[in-house]
Length: 342
Ligand code: BGC
Ligand code: CA
Image 1 (tube, rainbow, N blue to C red):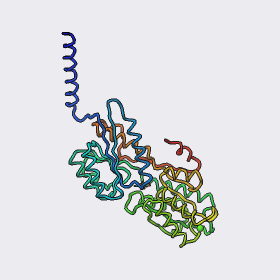
Image 2 (image 1 turned 90 degrees about the vertical axis):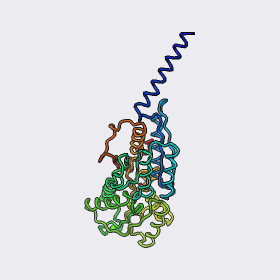
Image 3 (image 1 turned 45 degrees about the vertical axis):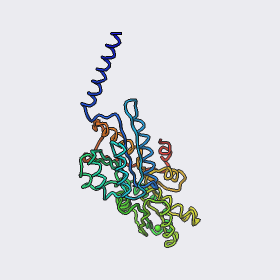
Image 4 (image 1 turned 180 degrees about the horizontal axis):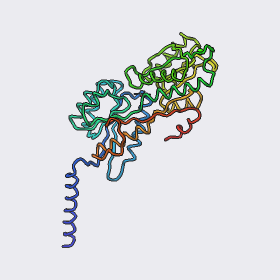
């Protein structure tokens, strides 16, 4: 009896020590509750990226570490997103991953996070530097926008040099560009760099039109139909800021019953399921892989470290709080490698 009591007493003391030790070291939490807010569920790439992110978070779960994610989409409304961020914090999230509706206006979200001292990871839609500097617990995970334009340009130059693209044989490539949202870093930078790269590669270009289709397949199909009406079969090259819009352009040619012989060549960016399949089927000449697995993996590592007060030493930052993943070229030659990624 005495022995049992003693054991019980010792256990109690042990428990007490464990608990109070945990408290003393302070910011080590055993619960990672990630609040994810993203701009619009209509966006294919962001949806695929968030699926990857949820999978990555799963890998951190252990008996001692509880990891959960709460995801909210804002249907393209900034006001909705501001509210959702508050709700996520009220629900107990201890780290936030935010894909901004308006990348130029994150102040309210930053203020809310700072008030509650919840670290903030922006992803895919990059705030301007001044906003990133508003608080020291703000991070950004994304990709090297400039590189996506360059790689798309290099792939297009190679295909053009192989012949067959200049269908009217005038020595110039008549091209159109389908652009993402007007104020999105990836849209502006991709357009600029793909054209510069083609010029550098010595390709003689003739711009027919640039059309904004907001990353959206249906909008791109409409824009492309208008351009086909205007230019008939003059278009030789379609450069699209993403795969969904390139797929929309292909849809337009399909609907108007254009044969292989009088279609342009199409290039996208992202390597979404649709994009990779289009490369596989020969509908796109190429795409540029937006490394969602890489981005998701850094977001998960960073979320767990920030929520548990763990070390950030294993993460390579640029300018202290930015992580940019590289892009990769995808053509018929290597598309299977990407289709097999999981
Ligand atoms: C992707 C687009 C996506 C956009 C959303 C870009 O990086 O390439 O497909 O629509 O991000 O912010
Ligand atoms: Ca031509």
